Length: 335
Ligand code: KG4
Ligand code: ZN
Image 1 (cartoon, rainbow, N blue to C red):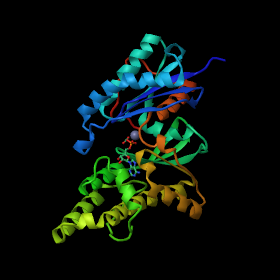
Image 2: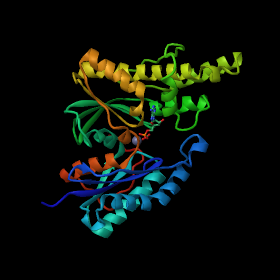
Image 3: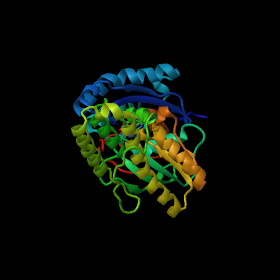
Image 4: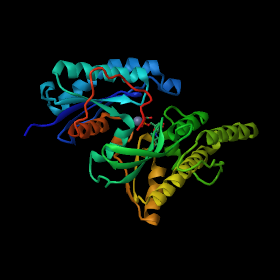
């Protein structure tokens, strides 16, 4: 039998990544993280595009070297079409298109958010359909009803900021380096989550809003710093624990409601924030109470990576979903 061998490219934000999948088995996942953004406290789009341009050839070559697979063995090329930064997406898209053209093989466009969810199909245990996926990243916060590999419906989403953005902006207010989400997670493990309280806004249905809480945190810190200049330094662990507790409470409220009302007890999380230890704990506790089965992706596949693009491309290949050479990136692509 002929193998289905796909090279996948991810370049939507600040990670340049390549992965090769053979017959549905993800063989490797090469990720080059761009350090250049750290000093700016956030991703600088122009610098991201340039770094992708520098990284993409070495990253792809490493993917071939690690697997021992030759270019001529490829049956298709998968790439992230969106959502993401236009200039960053353009680098991966142009590379994928050129390679598909040169090798005369089909091209497969992948939606980055669907791929975060499909990361659950890289390794066991794979969730059964239908399941609900809380997809939480730097740009998105969604509850997705996943009916099968390629059929997904967003049932709730943030109306303003994403929770990853709220983590990162809070971290910035605390003087922590970018990306601040993992730092808040780390300090939160050592703090008291009930030390400080922040107001939580109520949204309709299964929707979220994180802009109000972000402003509340800003005012709270300004007020406390006026009283004591050293407030943050003295209370860092407790502040991080309280902020994280509030974000998780908000995420869990809507997820519990969606699970109850839609009668779906299989729950997965995906996206960068799914690496958060507090969120994982909260899901495990709720699983015991509400008889959920919960699914966590490997840490390697939580943040941006081409392994998830590869597995998504594999399912699309099997379904015969290819795209034209005229395809262009879609920075606002939705599920
Ligand atoms: O999915 P991702 O790598 O990129 C986007 O598509 O946005 O997600 C990045 C986001 C950042 O906001 C980062 O701070 C957050 O995921 N993040 C975390 C943790 N690890 C990554 N947030 C909270 N706790 C973590 N452990
Ligand atoms: Zn992502």
